[in-house]
Length: 366
Image 1 (cartoon, rainbow, N blue to C red):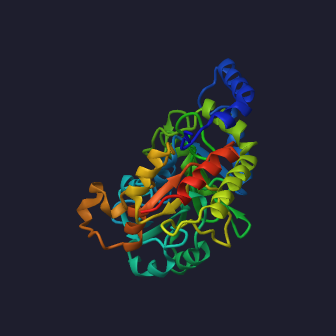
Image 2 (cartoon, one colour):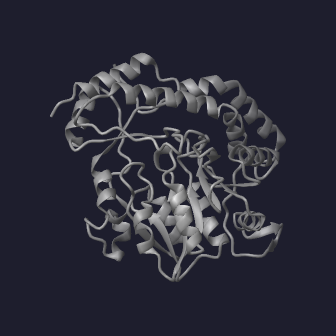
Image 3 (cartoon, one colour):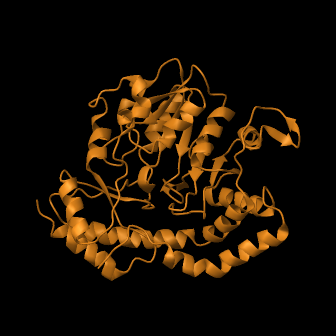
C-alpha cells in the first residue's frame, strides 16, 4: 500500500462546487485586489480568531515582517526567535533590519523555552516571536509574563496553528499581533500563497494595512515606504469557503493523531506530547527517533511518505553563519532537527491507511 504524506483530494472534493462558484463570482466581478471577498474573509477570520482586526497579506513571511515594521522595529533592535522553526521567522526579523536572537526550545512542545528566555534579553530587545510549532501552543503564559516584565512586544507566529486553543483562547488572539500563513499545505490553505495579520490594536491594524499597500491608505497618497503584499480576491474567496469547514477538518486530524498516539508503541520512537493547556491542530505529526536514517529506509520500503521539519536548526543555516553560532549552542533545537520525522496526516485518511502506518512503525527494529 502506498501512503502519501498529504492528500488534498478528500477535502477538495467536498468543497469543489463552492470553490468553483467562488472563482466564478470573483471572475465575473472584475475586482481582483482588495474587494468584497477580501473584506469578507478578513472579517470572518477575525471573528474566528476572536480579534477585532484581521488584514490579509501576501504570505506568512510578509505577515511577520509587516508586523515588525508597523511596530517600528528596525536597525539596532533585537527580536527573540526560537532556535528551531522554519527560517521565515528569522527572515522576517532580518528583513525589518533587526537582529534575530535565538533561544533554545523546550523538549516537550518544541516552543520557546521560558527558562532560557530572560538570559537572551538585552537593552536592544524589542520583541519576542513565539512560534506555535506543528500546531500547538507551548508555555505561552510564562513567555507572556516575561514579555510584560521587560515591556516587550509579543508576536505569535501562528502559521501552523489555525484553530489551536490555549486555555480556551484561539491562536492569533494571545499576543500583541499574530502572523498567519495560508500556504496550500496548511490546515487552512489557499490555492496559492496567502497570509494574514491579526491584532487587537486598531493603531497597529491601520499601519499594517497601509504598509502592505505601498504605504498608502488613499490612492496615490503614501505615508510610509511600504510594500506590495495584499491578499488577492481569489485566494480570499477560496479561504472563506474553506474556513467554514476548518473545525470539522481539524477534528478529523485529531482522530488520526489519536490513533497514532494510541497505536504506535516502539522504544525507538518518541511520540509528540500534548500541552494540557493547549489543543493541538496537528498540522504536523512529529515523532523523534535516534535512528532516523534507518527508519526512513524502512518507510521507503513500505512506500510510506514522510517529511522532516526541519533538518537544520536555525543556527545551523549558512544564511546566519555571520553570528558565529556553534553546533552545541542550542542542544534541544539541534537534537530535534537531527531526530524529527513527520508522519502522514491529512483529512480523510482512512482507517486502513492509518493501521498500515502504525503496523509499519511498530515492526521497525534497528
